[in-house]
Image (cartoon, rainbow over all chains, first blue to last red; front, top):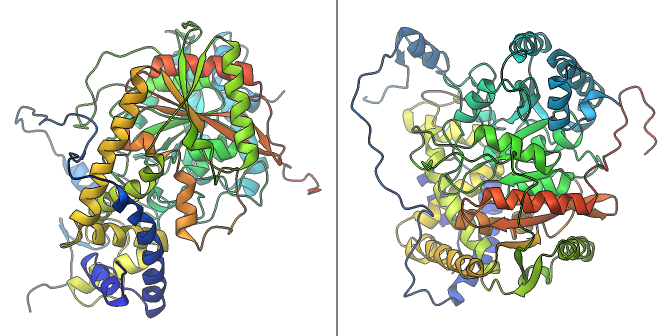
Length: 97
Length: 495
């Protein structure tokens, strides 16, 4: 199984990353090297094996649905980090034409 | 002897005996930073000296009361730059978060503050903790204190180098696939990754959430136990933080049973491991026998499969975790975008470095329709196999010993264009992450003047005995007091 430049372009579009032509060539080559190494897993017999997503037994952690104070100061602090803002809102390019 | 040369524990004892003040220790650390930081570049941000000193004054006042011994009150320390700090920028080593001030402190930041330690800065790292050399930092690479032509390892390379260079008494790092242990090994310090769930990840910027764990970088095992006493424990803000009774790791460090059984996996001493590394680790193993430890050669059959499985799981999780960097709410935003989609793509094109793009795309690929079963699901199954390998080993062994890294530090630039070769650095560290186990790297010798690390892996939540054993082993190895010789500013550099 090898990866072509068009697949790298597709994956980059899914990941929302623009790539230059040189990057497409470089990543295609590197992906093939890395995937070839990963293919060593194909030699393992895994049909009967259950997957592990987490090492700990995961269960829902619940808490009381209590209203906590969200102060003006916290909102200001958060908005302070916004690349662009207007009043108490994040500013983004227009979405609807 | 300069104060910065003391271990954290020695410094704490000197404070308790009123031989020094917290201000003296802080002054000494800033003096050391001024003298050698240009050669190491371990920090991304150094805190204003006056700010740290005024905190030291407050701590000194409170020192008069309370439990003085076995505490790190008044001790200067450093946090990796992916650990959130309200009052210092937290960049994750990335242009994407350059100058970013988080709106809250991480759990560990709070704990260390409550304990009265003094934050002096934020350490350099591979961007988003992705890398094994700190060369992937968006800002500049960190240099290995033992030889500045070599890398310090990564991704917590800044933290490891600063501890080795005596620019901080201790530091925290994060370990997703070896990012605390491997740089500890390459810089000749102690690096410890606790059991998954022992330390809260609240406020640790996520890379691969099922693998990430905050760890310690210290001068010796005693310091490690003292820091762990502060940061371990349940936190309701991290749903994977395990509620269990708090243990005291430093108090009983010297007490331990002498009859441990240790397994040595033969697969970890084969091809690809430098001869000097094998020799130094084997010397460490021989030392264990002197204290009555039973050493047995064992098999860890799937060690080689851990690395490819790790790079699928970690990249898949990272592709999801890093989706939040879209230029909308915080961090970098491209100025060139014309519409919303363009904004996402250009922000990520300009904000992420090459390794982050590589991993996010690889993870996206492994999760994408048609490849999920062939890659991601397969990797999760291999994760089960690795866990079972360990479970079997731990049925009749207390610990496993293997090298931390197959090589000593490598030259700057040597592996930077070859991602797969770079990934192979992690071959012995990723299994503990996949299985969630505690693992420590202890300096055990040298090769060509560069440190070698020995790794001890233990059972889940068996930190207490793991540290007791490591403490004994460390005292037998007698390498912990050998330190790098860094020419200070103003000194003639003869190398």
